[in-house]
Image 1: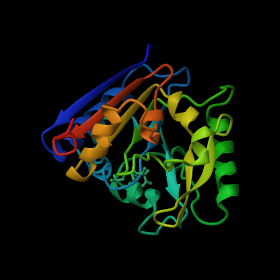
Image 2: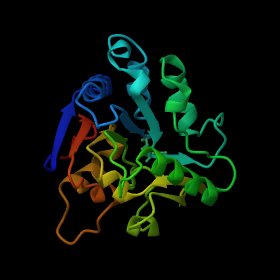
Image 3: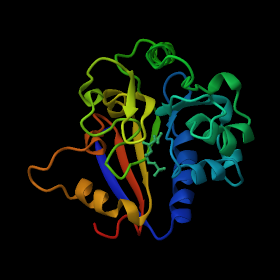
Image 4: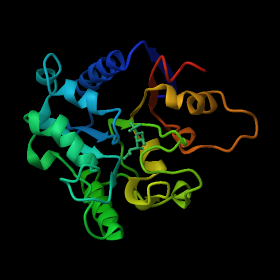
Length: 244
Ligand code: 6PG
């Protein structure tokens, strides 16, 4: 599978969410790895919530083989699972609690407690799931983009962007003063499929800079998402794409 990237513009966030849910279903029914499992790294933040809600409803819900679907997280805020800022809480409320996915197939990043230990624990869990691989190869990774060009919890100028061996790292959102745990760039770039979900006027200027970089401009975390042997898709709404 050679590397390709596509930019798809949708009139409304709802049309974007419907297309993303349809892709999730389609990719979950593609020929999978030897173990016949479909591994997904979910995105946090607000934009993916509507996609998760749709996946928990027909005509999407009964077209996904939830028994072979494994849900991981691309990043987490260092808060308990019931906290309003928890990415797990959002995904659980919108999707996980509403579909017949086995509890063991849901791989939460532990947000409460020591971030270093929790990052190492999650890396261990990934190394067990992707046993024998130098890097995990997710079937699908969902990602968002912050107004500063961050993705997952990989923030501009963060040392984590230079990581070359760890799969999971503790980081920090300095703007919010919030500790985070995130999968690293090499993990994302070894995925089979990656899908950015970006909506809203507030992100238009940054998206233009990301997709039409000026010569010599500093690389932003989202621009470091370049799959080695995979497919990258940008699903953006008309507002976010208004300057591209
Ligand atoms: C998180 C996300 C983060 C998010 C962007 C966009 O935990 O916050 O992983 O990277 O995708 O901040 O967030 P919105 O979708 O809320 O705009």
